[in-house]
Image (cartoon, rainbow, N blue to C red):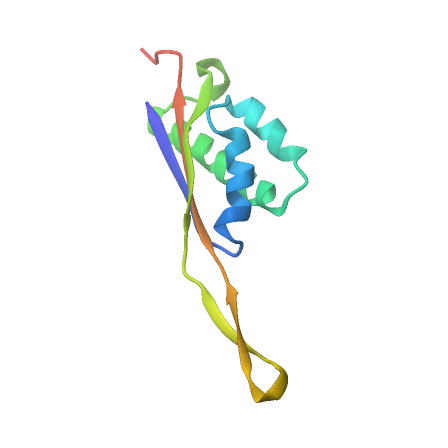
Length: 117
């Protein structure tokens, strides 16, 4: 049984978020949360919330109180590029330079290794 959690329009570039997502892909949920807790990047704060949401979604779907017995692991984790806000900043000689404020979408799928039945 698997559960899905998504974070949409996170105000950070997809490239920066992928650095953190690559560290937790395929790991157990406990190990992933420990990695995220001690990772010194902004993306780790956002990802920790998404992983906790995926665990909560799994408990609701499976109707099980304690998910620790079922050895949850991160089956799939990926980051897609979201929309960009475009702004202009004054530049020399009366020109304007474009500033792109990028966003991303994070998807995490959690699955259990131990059979529920």
